[in-house]
Length: 352
Image (cartoon, rainbow, N blue to C red):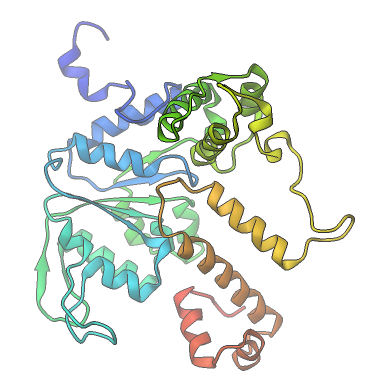
């Protein structure tokens, strides 16, 4: 309503700095972001991979009264359970092999600021118990220590899966879900806000043209039509990747259809041999290409995001084929039984 700007400023649905999009779906995201920023409540960001959850988390922090404090990011899906526990809570010297000095954890590092836990759905039940305690009591112990550390850290968590479905499947603790889900914000996939695609393309064209010392400023109508028709499984990150590709490949100042990958035209990726399934090397190549396409150019932790997921699926299927006989499965995998047992616990693989 006009004429009452002071009272309604917290509900403004205008775009946030550094975030592109003016569609109705994004306006709702902006409104909720501004409203929740002034509180200390936990926030749960939901949406597919590549929808911009980290950007919204950053915006919440910058708009909050914690803006002067640190903003610390942790990708829970990129680390094993033991490494993630040490990363979050820190450890003391001698806590485990390789712990040659005390280390401050991310919860402690984010004191008076905000801790962003991305892919919270990837955490194990053991870690979820410890996370619940920190959220409830604001205290924890470093790995291998008995001294309790108190922190004033706001937590923003993100998940690319339906956490309630994870709870129902007994992969995520219900009490932790409700503790995190104080204020949920759903980020729409790009296919549900196609009207934002032209502005996003323009933004990325300018960014990558300057970065690569190029001058690609025009977009062929046919190319834009194809971009607006595509289903975008990798969301904004995938679009960003394709615009960067276009800037590199463009022969003049125009982004043309020739700069687009074949997948945008609905064509299958080429196979190794005509009429036969692709070999393992080709499939691995395509898997890595897809993983890189769905990741942003600044994203790290790619080894964990791609390799650990392949490893989990491999172990799960071998166990299934071996009727869950770990000795047989370990032999097929070429690893010892202790290593297999640790992997089963790390990936929370249940007996079929």
